[in-house]
Amino acid sequence: MAWTYDATDLVTSTSSGRLNIVRLLVGDTDTTDQVLQDEEIEFALSVTGNDTYFAGAWSCNVIAAKYSRFVDSKIESTVSSNYSDLVKHYNLLATKLLELGKKSNGRSLGIYAGGISDAVMDTVAQDTDRPTPSFRVEQFSNPSANS
Image (cartoon, rainbow, N blue to C red):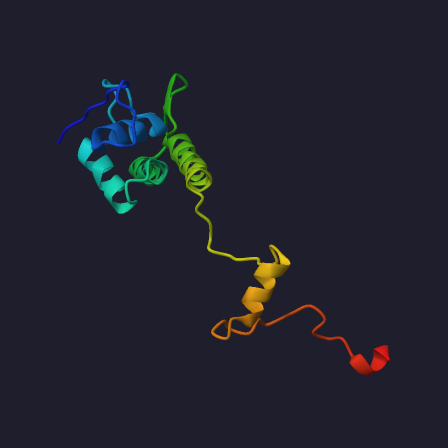
């Protein structure tokens, strides 16, 4: 297992650069406090199609899962460790990275609102292979009441 970080190599065009970007996004850049191994980040990149934001979010979820195994503890009134705060932090960071990934990559839920222009609406209406919409403008209008 390896742990590497190079702040001068933050590019999306190389595997080492993507690994460094994910480390930077999740805050795992301190060599004295290593959280994820290179192989774990490389796996995150592979399951997210080398998307650094989504791999960062995936990694944050892994880190949150790691810390959720531990309980908060307090020794007298001087020393305490709040792992639940770390879990909340990484869960929030994962959500933020997902949002950034969606914004930067133009990804959406695949919802099409239509009505962009009359020409687009006409083209869509003429497509015989398109399913009939469950609602449409003036679907409840009564022609005899309007006469």
